[in-house]
Image 1 (cartoon, one colour):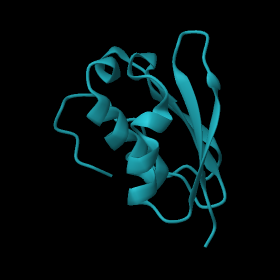
Image 2 (cartoon, rainbow, N blue to C red; image 1 turned 30 degrees about the vertical axis):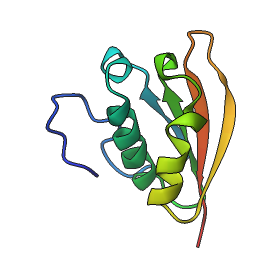
Image 3 (spheres, rainbow, N blue to C red; image 1 turned 60 degrees about the horizontal axis):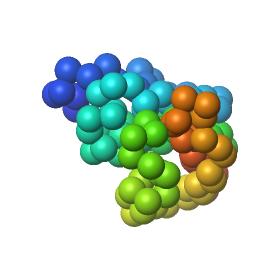
Image 4 (cartoon, rainbow, N blue to C red; image 1 turned 180 degrees about the vertical axis):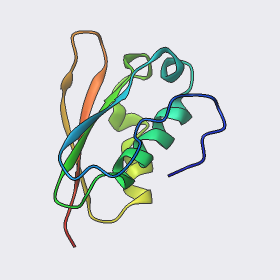
Length: 101
């Protein structure tokens, strides 16, 4: 995981050996798209192969395919991304499947 020097609460605190959701739609995420990308990467690293993490991103940045997906696909092999839906609050849900090797 990346070292947190921003004072922002980390999105994960350990490895997840089940499917889970990462909340990336706090006010700090609205102000910092790079924070969303970095914490999404941390969430994927913390997800055990064979499971998925729902990346719930702030709606202020628009559809995550336009700024997040390329970054994640470049950083990881064995990843399948799927757009789930837009939340009622305006955020977006991307399901990141961490594939077994």
